[in-house]
Length: 195
Image (tube, rainbow, N blue to C red; front, side, top):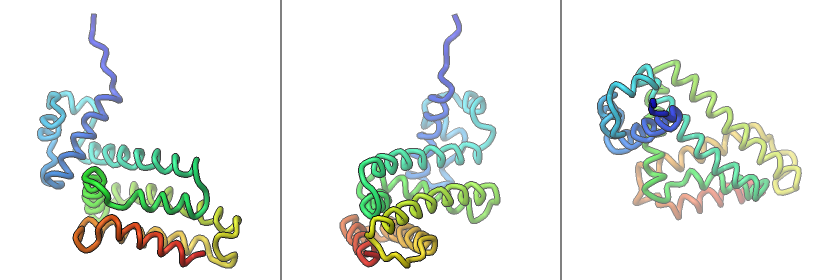
């Protein structure tokens, strides 16, 4: 009887291996052969799921952002307005080795975004979704009277996104001067200024 293979599970195994390699060795450490070795699966089987290294990298990023979206959805189901937004932004804070690795993977993706149109297009799509979520939470906060009624929500959403991206990137690059506790304080302080 032929072996039944869960194709989505195999793709996830390869994606997880890709992210581990990116976090450990950077983009130059991600070769198709290295991914197969890291996944402990055959090199040939990798090409049943991914046509190229770029295809594999994009899938890994989608998996990474999907995990974050799942966490953010949990916050939004429990909180609203500024409290939900605070949880969303703090989810980007580098608080442990796992989130540090996720940031390295994201920063590696950014390098591809700067150089290749197909990655830039994917990045725009992901950021549009992120900005839409931030805008929604700011709008909730405004309707609940938590923030100034005259605040331009779309402009503020862009400012919040820019701020949180900067906090995360600097937290990754300078963990001694910007530890997780200080990152969270900066996020809370920023949101307090909107009240």
